[in-house]
Length: 259
Ligand code: 13P
Image (cartoon, rainbow, N blue to C red):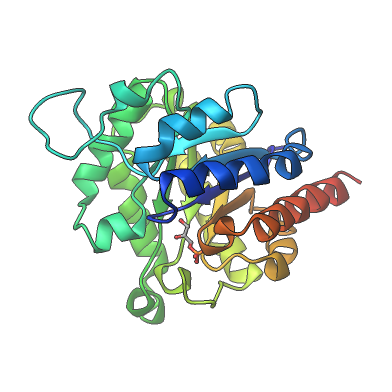
């Protein structure tokens, strides 16, 4: 059985003191669930080191929201995988805001995934279709394109450090989450694709998260779906009580599934 993973993507929120204060408040509540759920916080890069220092003795893991594809050089404003490796365990790659606001291409995302995996980082690769693509019935085609380009050259072995986050663009920050059934269907399709490209075993082990307007109210019904192995949470990860409640629902639904 896959251990669920819940990640909080803080996006561009909190000053450094606010971020540290928030982690200190969240920590005791969250740590109670660490045996049942892998927990990851993705703070803005300016406070990554501070947050990682606070959590050094905690089971809660820290990750970056973005990474460069080169190890060093003239890349103003970027942070390389070599700089993150060793103290920061996870990195989010291909978030829809990176794709749509900052114009990241599938090719750039592929280079980031490869570079991060090469440095031993755990990658959460985000994929998702726009509303227009969804309404045109093109979800499967878009998923296949985003996945095949992003994972080009990634071996089944390296993919042991990979998770996928299915985040439909129309569900992000809109209060309109995908229905559990729809999310489960797309994620099942993603797993079938992974089995064909990596291996059946690797596909079974890979965690696929749902992201997009996850709240304490809808978390339980999403997490009960068999293909959904956790959540990538935006807005609700900025509220300690809401994030803890989502993690608690995830732990509960896993316990229920195990009987
Ligand atoms: P919301 O949970 O605010 O919809 O954001 C989802 C997201 O983009 C997480 O990466």
